[in-house]
Length: 355
Ligand code: SF4
Image: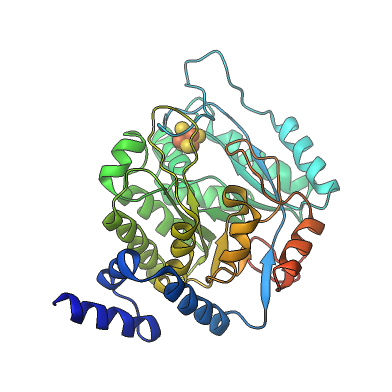
């Protein structure tokens, strides 16, 4: 196809059928940001009734800051053989849940490094203990790399590990640790991290077991434009095969270490990613804007570029330095001032649910 035909085809697909990978790449590289944003805004209005923008509230509990994966961009972890770092006891975990619960944060995002010294029983005990004391708390927990490590350490299949965790109280699953799903970038991020195929297979198993999940992209390093589209294509395929992905969140890398090259992602590129995600990921209902990373002004613009959810007040965030919203009132004010109707949701996108 010559470039004129490609442009015509790509522009037609802004308005109609499912966007192909080549059209997505074309738009990412060539379509003016405001054209993509306008098309994405129209798409959001068709998909999300009314003028609704949602938010939710949850507490992150990092149960261990010891990690064997050693991602080059991460300053959070301590190596397994280090004398630094700690793993929370079950009582410490419960105290953190209680603290959040009393502040109306009834959703827990339970995540840690990959610490092969922690026995599998710790994970099931943590979940059952939280559920015993706080039956109405929603637990979103772990990531594909943690699950894969548990599978390897216990010599049991991923499906068996996930089934046991679900029985113990796991309610939903974050599609964390995806960053950029290309083999070349995985080798730069960490040679020990899940390969794209491993990440995909764990996610597919979790989603097929009925867990709902969010997914994301983290870019702003040395990834190529083709690798960005390759990543989006895997996410769309995963959703075609499972149907349980609730949302997609574009994040950008933050400079945390000097072992990993981070570039500045300009505002228009971030907004272009929001718009392209809305248009290309036609099978995922919700696109979240991350105020944690990009701040309020960019967040407000993102709501006009296809996003319908803000990445919500988080109580305690160790992995990322944030300038997000700190309270429910700040959320409501932010969404209202941006010209939208604020609606509280659960992690599983039940609207109006106070959890
Ligand atoms: S990003 Fe996660 S998996 Fe990678 S080193 Fe940090 S804690 Fe470990």
